Amino acid sequence: MLSALFYGLTLYTYAAVWSMLPVTLILQILYLIYIKKLKWNKFMAAGILILIVLAVPLLLFVAVNIGYLEEIRSPVISIPKLVAMRSSDISFEQIGEKFSRLFNILLERNDGLYWNCTVEYGMYYKFTTPFAILGLLFCMKNAIISIKNC
Image 1: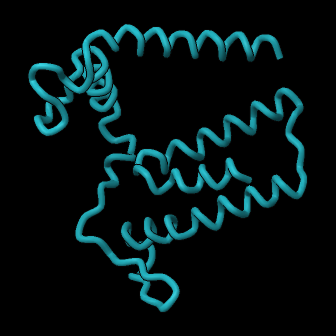
Image 2 (image 1 turned 180 degrees about the vertical axis):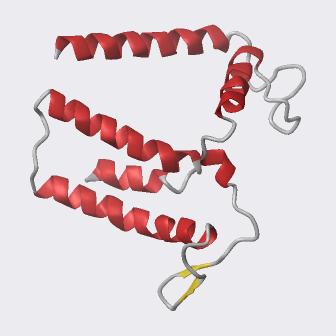
């Protein structure tokens, strides 16, 4: 239940989470099914309920701001129609360019936006890049080994 609470709160941190959280949860559920550890009980039901309760306001917000619903104004909850919505941040449009920018950030420590980094140091120190790459490779290796051992 605590995990569901924090997953639900994570939805309010950054728009990219909106598309990645369902993918993460589906992959976790599939893994639990694969290793035969998925158990339906009152705690699972409570966790799902917590996640749904936390996700509904966000789903309403998205529905209002992409035009599926009118602006909501009530004593309980208000969801305004924004002047602009950054929906392109969470779309598959220009996915190649987005991956290119991600690799550019990883390799050059710069996303080209002057407010995100300094000329001298970039977004992070040079010596951290190998650690980031090694950490990513280590995680991938362990995930593959874990899946093979199940």
